[in-house]
Image (cartoon, rainbow, N blue to C red):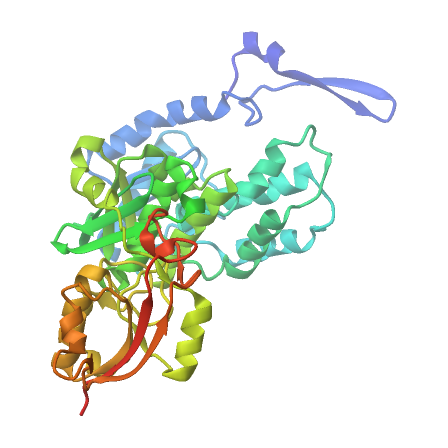
Length: 494
């Protein structure tokens, strides 16, 4: 493509040969010119318009392009048309680099385009060169230029690998951004080293994006929200599957973005059985959450959660879409996030371990959540990470040696349900003889505990028997209780 003679003088340069300086100027369009790509694309635009106006499916990027048809014969016809048109337009085609024979797999713009499997993959030699570049790095010290080279290659993988390229390069980007000049020596942080190791070990196994964008309705629609003391979420299909978790003191002190992002992860991990191998759409009223899940964060705590979400979805084959909605469209999740659990205190490890040895081992904690469980197997009032199910009274207690520490209002119902199930377990209650549950345990005629109470240990106003939950003013978490505690061994099996 010729340059006008009047403009050639602006494209001159000098080159030193031994001791002689010689001067040159471009008479044809040089690709080193910043506007060259734009100019070349504009020149070819009429040709592309001609093809597409006839219904031919052609894509062109600078001087490299391809066409596609539904079958090999039609593709062969398309190939002949393109060759003739390019020749007629005055272009010289590089036959050695061209592939005119119809194929379902080719390498274009640094990616392998596989029409048979609808995949966009990284060429093996590209992965090999990338790993070789990583192997050359010294973890102790490397230049900002070297690290930028690696980071740039990772970002270039995005068309094939997706958002993980941005998520798992954040710490490296931070080091490059804070360097003062390209040759400055950089000492890799632990997080940056972990990112490099991640790409070294996983770049060849990460799932590839589908070549053709397909539109599906989501299998599950989820809303999440977080308040200053708890988080909540639910699945649209059934409001009975509600997720709720009280924040720990540390979590409650974090930023609203941290809590909102954590709410997404907790909701996903609480309802694993509902989300595996599905397309899940999550709605949140925090815009930062959407951005962080897609691209990661410079904040290390937020970055860790973003990585946890990615790994969780990868492990369970979950396709995740996250979208922002205004707060007034997220009112139900907001209500769930503002539920306050006044009864999440629990028996301290010292006392639990004693009874677990004496009357155990226990196999299920019937009234617990992910914050206060004493056992790996537990039932919770709402869905939360690790729970075996919701609503302990919907379960058959005869299958367990039960650890039963219910809220006071559920003590009577707990005794009745254990009787119905013909089960066994250890019940922890306050010794409140005026309470409605007391006649269920105490025999008026015999003036002693009923037959199913096999053993009893009473603690007189013990200290630190219970550990604090969310309600720091609860009477159950006082330094010294104002009432006695009973630990009863119940057995309805006979």
